[in-house]
Length: 244
Image 1 (tube, one colour):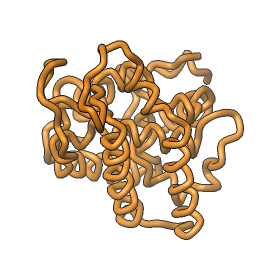
Image 2 (tube, one colour):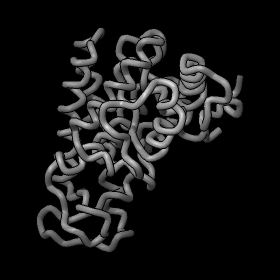
Image 3 (tube, one colour):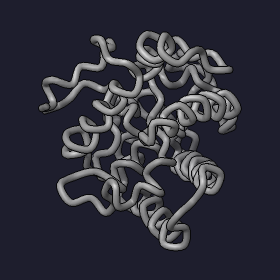
Image 4 (cartoon, helix red, strand yellow):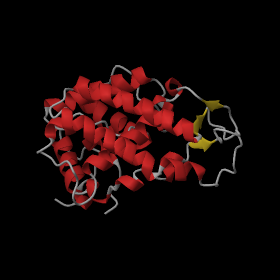
């Protein structure tokens, strides 16, 4: 099988276990090859944020590059990769609960660090709307880029620090980046196979998943089904079109 054969837009006659086994192959053999931590996030994600100078409160033009420069700053990225490396060195076989507690602390820190740099999410959809200063207003808006940062660090590039199956005890707990492409495939492809999760899948982009509680419920539902087949949930990233 090669990356061009891995079409996950529909089951194509596969049952759930076959589909996610193919997704696992595609993710570990193809998807991670081009994932580089210092470019973990692209315009499609960081465009939802705005910039407000944390001291003067001045707002630069939308295309000033302030959001991009701050969210891709190497010192910021290194802080989170070092936090993870330190945590994993002390937690070689974490449970879901262990990892999720660490994850929550890092999403909160990610939000706080971006806020201190002036990178914020506006309320609603208007580019001129008021800023949100509360993580609970837009939990997945910050969880998604953090998830991308973490798995790019752990698994990205030709010589990743973590490999499967050597680090399966950690990899099986990683969170995928939940966004519009993943949401649509959960609804269209996976729900007919395994049923409806206890919280509705958002319609639209990743900022539509605002509640930490709903994020946790969706994650737990799909993680349970994937783990029954001994497949890490991070392979949901295979729903993204291949760049090969």
